Image 1 (cartoon, rainbow, N blue to C red):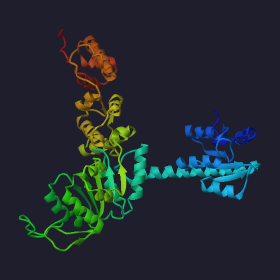
Image 2 (image 1 turned 180 degrees about the vertical axis):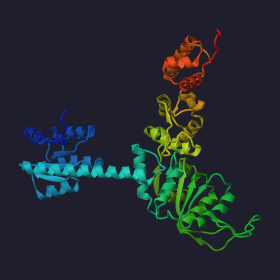
Image 3 (image 1 turned 120 degrees about the vertical axis):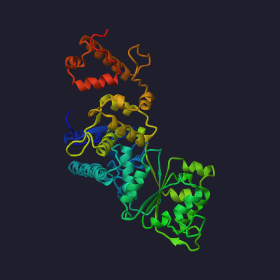
Image 4 (image 1 turned 60 degrees about the vertical axis):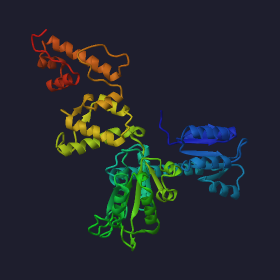
Length: 474
């Protein structure tokens, strides 16, 4: 099929107008879709995307103005040119207010129309390319420790980059293991506060009385063990950022004091009488439904709204599985460097999962999210005997969760509900057993006859739990 300059939709109730525009557009190298009324035009716009829409102002079922308004409510990007036999300054101004990009009266100048169509489509494509280039550069350079090319991650990173330079309090939500603290660090690192302290507080790991002393500090003699004055995290983080992980676990008294810090930008250390002024940006994270805790009376409503000025929601790994190969590659390099093994001359990992193992990872539900995947990759680095990592190196719990049983002993039929991996491995196991028996249980001869390296055969024998007999044994 010949490539066209772009796809254009013509929405007009007059047949001769539709056919005339179709001829003009196709002659100029465009592909044209035609709609004879507003309803058909809206249906086509919902079912596919267009580079530009030519929309008639007056149609029997609905006016072009109504169609324009409805389209712009959900799509601000697609260029729309209004066309009408009822040209007037008022109509043109109204159409432009509603989001039309240009306005042409019947009969129009074909040459001018094509020039404007060419110009508009070229401009939009340039804007699109620039936007995606900025995203690619941002993804590559701005947040090197946050791995993700999926649409949800790109949108999330866009939001992070937009809010990083602000002073706003941010609530980061997501399941355990999705990387909430990593996002908080990225916000701090890309903010004007990057040269000052980033202090992380695990809100649920300390008892309330110790947490308050840790946050706000104390003066000497404030309590029995307070043998000297000590600064709290808020004072340490002055001009920087303080991050509350699992904010929903804060006790009622600490919630009140945190609210005061946000509102008044000051706090009073335990045992002191004078308040301390601070300039600290607060980031908070939770894997709980904080609003539900508000409704249950377990979290202050006023504090909730103070924290939730901007919400950044992190997707679960099962919602962005296309990122798994990139994440695995990132963790392979990190842990290969840490263990000083399987590295190329440039210090990059040469480890990779075999296709069957990667398929298991892609099908897994990942209840522990990215943290669980990281643990799986670290285990693979430690246990791998060669660069190609097989299925049996994956944790038993992960295999069992996906219905895969690797160790079946020396025989027995496959269960009726056997997975594809079990069927393939059972077939491989029987082939290797037959060849070993044929070669008198000489692994070297069996490897030669199967055209594989001896080390590869040995690994498969171990993975498939094949019991090796000595030569001459029956």
